[in-house]
Length: 189
Image (cartoon, rainbow, N blue to C red; front, side, top):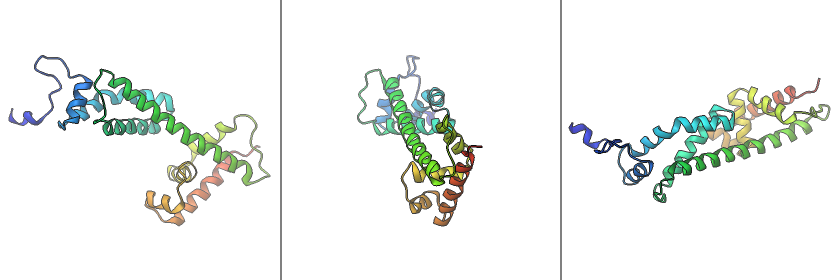
C-alpha cells in the first residue's frame, strides 16, 4: 500500500473517474502519470481519426505525437473549462494540416523537377499528382526520407546528413537514385 501513494489515482474516493481538466491540473502540478493518463485516454481514437485524415499510419502517428507535445507545452496556459477534448482535436487537425502543406509543397516541387528534368519525358496529363504520390510511396524509406527532407524540409545536404547520421555522399546518392526512380515511374509509355 505504501508504494501506491506516489501513483496517480484515476478514480477518486467517490468512485468517479478524473476528468480531463482534473488530469491537466494534476499534470501542471507535476503529479506523476497524470499526463500519461491523458495520452492513454485519447491516443487510440486520435490515431484512428488522424489515419483516416492522412491516409497513412506513420504520418498519423507523427501528427498525434506532435499534438500531445503541443498539449504538454500548453500545460501552464490551459484554462480548465471542460473542453480539453475539443482543444486536443484542434491541435491534431492543425498538425494534420501542417503535414498536408509540407507534403503538397514537396509534391509540387517534385512535379516541377520531374517534368523539367528531362524534356523528352512528358508527364501524364491526368492523375499527375497521384503518380508523384505513388512514386514517392514506392521509394525505399531511406531514399524517401532524404528526398522529402531536402525538397519539403528545405534542408541542405549537410543538414540531412547530420539528421540521418550518414555521410553527405550517401545523401547525394540517395537523392539522385530517388529522383531517377521517380522520373522512371512517371514515364508515359
